[in-house]
Length: 299
Image 1 (tube, rainbow, N blue to C red):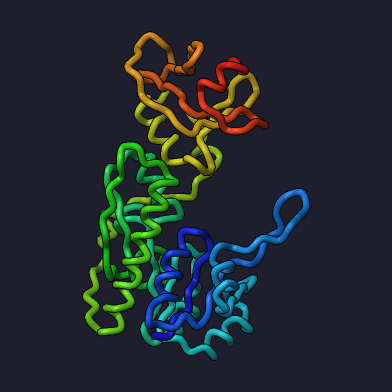
Image 2: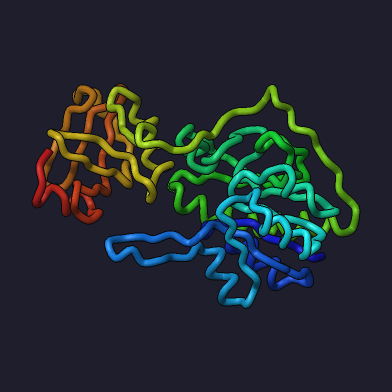
């Protein structure tokens, strides 16, 4: 099949790699425009664009998805199928172009966790299982008919980074399987039950702020769900500290937000039990272990 691939971050690259190595033709890649980053304002590519450049695949970077030149080029390419992995919301006049439609790979077992951050929210909410879904696009985001699904276990020590990587690899296999059943005409669609839908809204700065009145379990899951990026944080004496790794300790003697600092440990009271901080980053400093932290810092 002739495919146009839509994607931007590293999460999408394994799916693109698998398609490129298959018998299908990736006719073009659509990704985000280049950005200037850092003090030197150096221009950086998206991970998906870098793959396209390295493999001589045409890369399209429209500033707007409704751009006439962009739409004209999509029509000229006359692809059989559009595949979307971690990209912006497509307008209907784009995703209805190919004869076989457009499908998206989503990081949850839809209709659970519709939205921008399904992987993070599954961990933050303490789930032990999540999954991946491929579905045909509809006008309303994340509501299309389901093609395939695959369950993924969330291990006790998983954080956003480790689960993201596992799901990225597993997602590539699901994408290939989905293309195969579309090509062979063996598609059996499942309509989503919107009454079972839950949200996975964009992660904000407020989401990342630790509330020590919450239980130690809730705070531990928040830290896992936001590590290594963007990181859960707390403010102490006007300074911000990011927390990347914790463990729950059975302590009832510390009130919420009360810190106990020993020669090796940093323990904080919570609404229920306490948190032992294992990795922390003081404002303006590098990430470090709690053992390194307590040598030179005090909260």
